[in-house]
Amino acid sequence: MTNSAQPPINAAPPAIVLVEPQLGENIGSAARVMLNFGLVDLRLVAPRDGWPNPAAETLSAGAFDAGVGVSQFDQLSDAIADRKMVFATTARPRGMQKPIFAPHQATERIRSSGQATAILFGGEKSGLSNDDIAFADGILTYAVNPSFSSLNLAQAVGVFASTWAAKSDLPLSFSEPLDPPAPRIDVIRMLEHFEKELDRAGFFFPPEKTSLMQNNLRNALIRANWTEQEVRTFRGAIKALAIGRGAARIDRDQS
Amino acid sequence: MTNSAQPPINAAPPAIVLVEPQLGENIGSAARVMLNFGLVDLRLVAPRDGWPNPAAETLSAGAFDAGVGVSQFDQLSDAIADRKMVFATTARPRGMQKPIFAPHQATERIRSSGQATAILFGGEKSGLSNDDIAFADGILTYAVNPSFSSLNLAQAVGVFASTWAAKSDLPLSFSEPLDPPAPRIDVIRMLEHFEKELDRAGFFFPPEKTSLMQNNLRNALIRANWTEQEVRTFRGAIKALAIGRGAARIDRDQS
Image 1: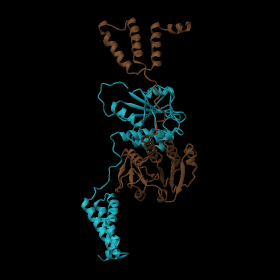
Image 2: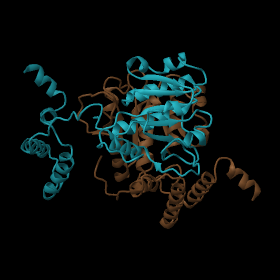
Image 3: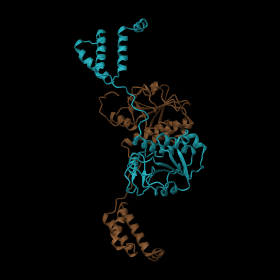
Image 4: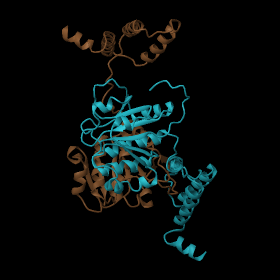
């Protein structure tokens, strides 16, 4: 993590490096969740069962065809040769002189530095070795339950990947679908309509409590932030109730 | 999401509700990542293969014995009967009048309200139905890649769970292991030692560039934020180099 002369830019998505992964299923699941969150550079260091791996293909849900590139290396040093910032993921303290980063902190660091970055994940059995971690600028760790801290490898990749996407300028999967609220006058007319029919039905009793009862109803209903369509629907419902049981249907049939 | 009279408190961890999950493997993986991040209340609505499920047990890595409680329901309405706030997870817009929450926003809402909450996740095939989502106060969605948005069920649980833990007051899995930096005078003495030996070796040439060359070295080395132990180690290394090839070992052997 040197002071680069180049200005901070938006970094390319970091490479995910799996060091001596064992199960093809986990490699495939890692690729799937990488692509879910826009990461496409997967690097394998000495995968136990070689590469390609049919189990990885199955669990990837098509991620390798849809954009995740895989490269294979014999040594970690080769896998990170072109990187300028490296984080090592671990849930165990290692007594090393490395700064510690939560996922959102690492993401902010990567994005503000603009450096080509690798995130290292160890194999299923025992994670990264101290020799692996010594190559890293910092340690990435999660807020895990201390009595149950061992994450599945692909889940560990997923936690970083989702944080990367959430902290990036990527939008949520879809935008707010809310229609705008109805003009307040429409809501007030709706409430008045409701109250008029309630009054006709003898709801406000005793009369001196009318105002209190009205305000209780208004306070509750106003919180619902009605759209115009919903106001129309509710007014139809009031009307139907006011007409009486079964009569609303008859009324519509005849209209 | 009513205005409760009770003051905001730290909410208990939300319940995770899997609606019509298919694969036991995903139920087990979901339970594992729940417990990794401190969630312990798993509710299954009409799991395809019934419950208990041996495949779930295998993939749970012991999470059911270590703290995750499972309850089973025929209907979603029964599974959320005791909840006061409900979020439905989906990656697809549904055209419903529901507010949208990112995981950190949902987490903040749950924690500030202090309400018993459920997070709903749909089955592997098609996610939550619109009827399921209609029970929810809000929609939870992630910043996914629009062209590859379908998460594995357990990964979807993991993204929420890790955000819940990160936004809670839970600490990272271990605290900063850094020893304090050495007093600056120790670092300065180390630099002077280094420069003295470099000078003896004829490194500073031409002489008028000595100051520039020294400052280049000092700027680089000072960034490393040396601890006392590291200062001692580096001074030993300078000494060894100054003594000359092989001689350091001989010197130590004789001392």
